[in-house]
Amino acid sequence: MKAALYCRLSEEDRNKPAGTCDSGSIQNQKTMLLQYAMEQGWDVFDIYSDDDYAGADRRRPQFNRLLRDAQQHKFDIVLCKTQSRFTRELELVEKYIHGLFPAWGIRFVSIVDNADTASKGNKKSRQINGLVNEWYLEDMSDNIRSVLDSRRENGFHIGAFALYGYQKDPKQKGRLVIDEEAAAVVREVFTLFSQGYGKTAIARLLNDRGIPNPTEYKRRHGLRYRQPTKKNSTLWKYSAIADMLENEIYIGNMVQGKYGSVSYKTKQNRPRPREQWYRVEGTHEPIIERALWEKVQALREQRVRPFAEGTVGLFSQKARCMYCGYAMRSSKSRGKHYLKCPNRHVAKDACVGSFISVARLEEIVAAELNRMNADIWIRMSWPGDSSTAETWNRKKRGSRRTLRLAKKSWRSAGGDSGGFIWIR
Image 1 (tube, one colour):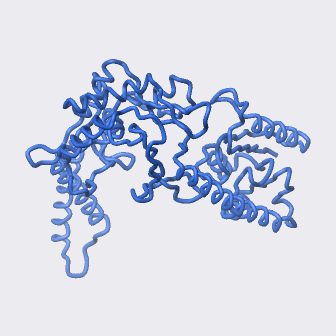
Image 2 (image 1 turned 90 degrees about the vertical axis):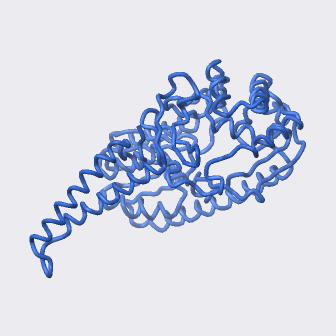
């Protein structure tokens, strides 16, 4: 019998030495499971370990790898310390432990609470455990939200990391103090913008001088920040400069709660209306003087933005540069809208850049939709009823011509892959 061992911990052990090491609790779970498997005479297929993940998080990487391997029947048993290590959701208990696992020929065993799908008699106890775990999740979520909201209302900083330019006060929890090294960059950004420099130009200046962007700065200073590893992830971008110039935290006001969780069962967040934000003035020392802040805000209001009517562009977050993978940004010139790669100008050799007019891209997408429709018509149509064979063949030849032209236009724009439109 082959057993898959699954371990999980939702909060980091304080004695955890580094970001790539297992916490003490995870190590203890592994030891317990290995010993139990050895006593039962089971062979260990693999150990799946999710550290720093909640039991309601369905995006746990090792959890999902375990499910994929279970579906392929690479092992016979799933072994956990407790049922709650596998999941705290009653829905997933029913879906996997009582549903799919038996269908896949997989036995589920948890040591501490004696859950075992090979024993028909303890199904109700497993369901009760699942229900109790579900209640625990909901109550814990409500309690945590209440505490955090209270602290936000009183101007305390809530978050794993301080905003770039600040650091957490080691002497007082929830208070920010200025990080002079990063604050100097913040002051320079505001000053340059007040002197007429654009956001992309400012990003280029910082990148040319080798100044790390906020995420890279955190990493270099030993903060356990999960930074993306894709190309150009260490560079300053237009969006980083834009976000900085409108953030009130730099004038001493604590603004939080811009995003709220969709549900306690997921880490997914969504934007909240401005009137629901938590805004408390004068909670910490400002980096930017009020006069400079007001000048910058006035300049920001004067800048003409494409799609100023507030609508979201048709290709927003869908059109991406084929060379660097970054989302194309809209621009406007002589009344026409264009999409271009914002990385082209932020640093030397960052990207060769992509460029296309919105009108041209709309034509290409429309041609591709027509091609798809023509292709479906060719496959689904058949001569019959009032249609003669000659008429049907003529339509088919015309549809194939449309198909060839659409494919040619589609390739000229880069084509589609992975749910995005890739632009050369």
